[in-house]
Length: 223
Image (cartoon, rainbow, N blue to C red; front, top):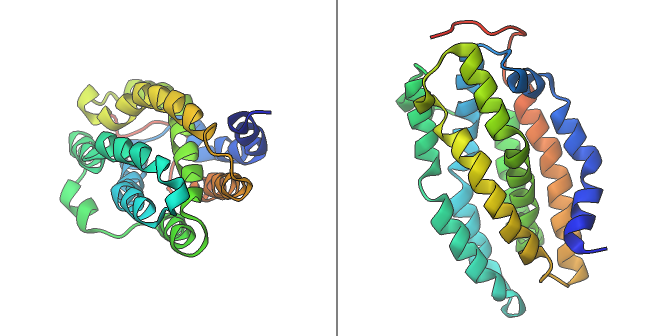
């Protein structure tokens, strides 16, 4: 079995746990209120703003026999620059206070996911961070475009309030093709186990991030 296929198989249970979270299920149906959507974007901002620092840290800690990953990291950095500002723009377009979110603190569950990845990079194996990449990008290709359209329809918000989700829905399809090829170049068993471990754990931690977001079962506060 190719490593990418193994990664998909060994994270299936954890992926299903994430997709079963009521907040995410309601979002996919557009059955959330504006406050819930803004709360989701707020938590997204707080973890997405760490993407570039994560990648830079990984690149600086790679051993010499893993330097082929630096090119991939450089490409990811170029692609991900400024995405946290897209989220703040969406918050403002949805009627939220972008500066309050920027200066605010994430929920504990988001903080734990952020801290887990820094700890793994620094203390365990920097290559494991590609498990986080897999979790985020595979999730985006599955839910971003569908969820954005459903929430937009349910709340009557403008397209300008969904640039982060809609861009990632299409962008991450290309990213996943790149990621799949990259994973097949990783042949060290310890690196593979690290990637699987981080992917499994971040699916679980991301599920907790969604659970921490208050929500109702019906769309409300339509703009």
